[in-house]
Amino acid sequence: MSKAGGENTITDDTIAEMLCGDSRVEQAIRLIMKKYGEALYWHIRRMVVVHDDAEDALQEAMMNVYKYRSTYSKDFPLSSWLYKIATNEALKLLKSRAGFMQSVDDLGDSLKNSVSAESDPDADKTLILLQEAIALLPIKQKMVFNLRYYDEKSYEEIHLITGDSINTLKTNYHYAVNKIKEYITEHSLL
Image (cartoon, rainbow, N blue to C red; front, side, top):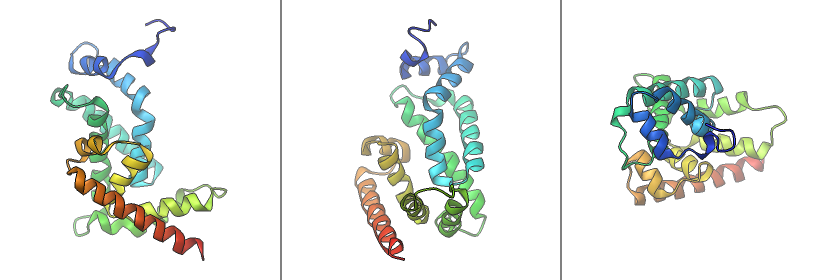
């Protein structure tokens, strides 16, 4: 590849072809990491909060991209497929953290405490409140809010990632926004 054209000009369709073939799989994984690695890391990190956990989940996600590449369908956008795998890894990590007898939704306080522990001492207090509010959301609301607000995904894309109906996604997003506003308003007055 020439430096003038570079790897940035490679389309998702080309990456998908490389991934599903046998001879250029490693190159496809490198291209995926170059193009989507940071976005997938932050998607996972916003769900699991802790940096080391996010790195571990991203590594597992990339191994699953490799392992399950034969299940990829060209009818599915590559980015949505990658986000689905990353989301599943984040959920798997949260479920293991919750343990056998606890729901992932019960991790809110623990995740909220991790926000403070992971935050830079000079971080903007409003941004910390936002992250704490997101950490306290039920997992479905958190996923939809993060995908919509941070990753700027359409409801159609989020549907492909989560499998939830568009109406359910809109409802979850609405509830998430209201809960976040309430939390920030209540805690910024303290």
